[in-house]
Length: 116
Image 1: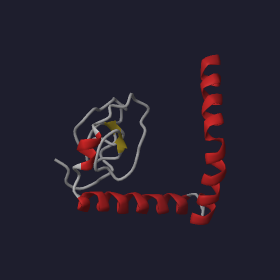
Image 2: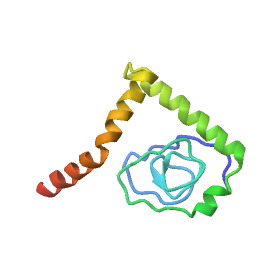
Image 3: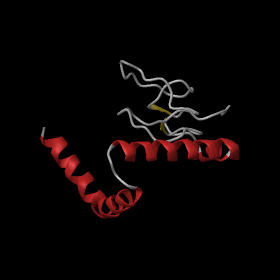
């Protein structure tokens, strides 16, 4: 079932992928970065409908796979901060301010999308 977390292959056509463990940005799969699945290192939204697996399936992921996924996600996060020249402190401050207005920003995005 789940083995080891990985980013996954990038589909050049950005086709939706449901289940499996090959594609980055898929949904409801395992081991790869995506949404709605289990055992992946971090969330990756490719803009498709999300197919969510059950919580029982997520809970059945072995602890060593969860730990490896967490470590890989943290490493990717630190690398991204380095790329954008942001410290972990800066990221926490940004998250605090961003979190305070997240709902309002989401509402504004919906309004603007409907105007187009």
